[in-house]
Image (cartoon, rainbow, N blue to C red; front, side, top):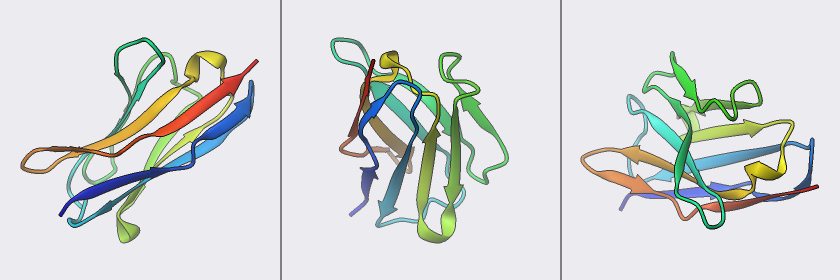
Length: 115
């Protein structure tokens, strides 16, 4: 019943920007924290950003701090990840997740940053 769908990935040059979205269906995200993860090719999955259930607190990996911004719009059950000044090392498949009674993951969206 619960589904998460990411959108907005693509190919961008170094220094460019992308905005990812994660839309949740089947259950409201109001009051629940949401996270963005990424998995670079050949590497393990890592957390990138997180936002608290009411949107009053955010956290970022050191590697993206100052470049990425997480936000939420509970009216459309969506969380966003604004990515600026992209670097080749940001190349990865990006996933959102949320923990209700268990953790749900989206299918992921590919971000590729060329030099």
